[in-house]
Length: 349
Image (cartoon, rainbow, N blue to C red):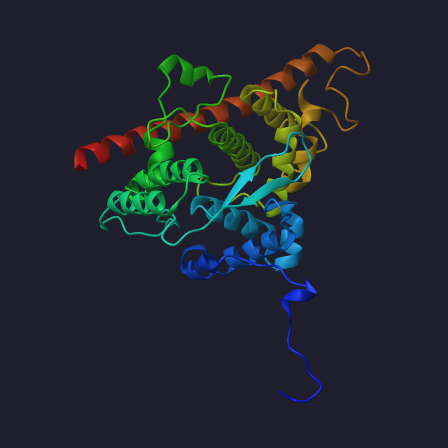
């Protein structure tokens, strides 16, 4: 080494550490997962906990926020970290860096398999071997933690025994179908898919299902207002999804019927731009809960008291109901397609 230059020293304290096992799982978590894990390790305290916002992680690792969220989900899935949600809205999540021993990391669920590929076998034998090894090397102080990890490994491994067909259609084929009379009027609450493991849906799964229902309602209303065919695309953007999540959290007491009412009233209002991207009008959907608005942002036909107000109000109500009927018809068609797809899948099996 050239004279006068010094190598780094652990004693100086300007360092952070990661488990050696992390470097062996790059094929499972990818470069984004490795970068995100290193940011968490950099911010971890003495309890191996890092409380940090998604945007901060994105800034420090150089990946977009959407990719950061995917990487965090993957790290949770393989058992590298544990996510704890904040107690108050608006605060960042806390991520615990879990203890990693040889053979304890799981492979993520398959995301790109052909329909003809064989199902991914659940590595139950490997899980049993790992659990036995852990019990042998663990002392009494960590026996409880080892048992918990082994149980979690078995639960996640059992979910791996699905192929792409069942994985991609699980939300459609396993969703309980409503009775015919409920389809015509549309249920006031979102229907939640039953997970493939047969257990009741978690709160996160319910939120995601409700979110997809609202997105579908916006898609149908947007396409109807702009004469876009079913195959056409609505100009969604990452910012639109962020704003939608913010509004859903702000009005988390609302049911699906209330969101659909706001959407239909918005497109039946005066002075709007039908082709405005969702990111522009989503933050203001709550304004339309009472009905369609005029160009002055007042309820249609309810501001001046002139003769003909009732007629205008009736026309406005009819326009809103027409948009709502179109949304209901679109949902009915999608449920029928899902039922037909489920029937064909059972026939082929």
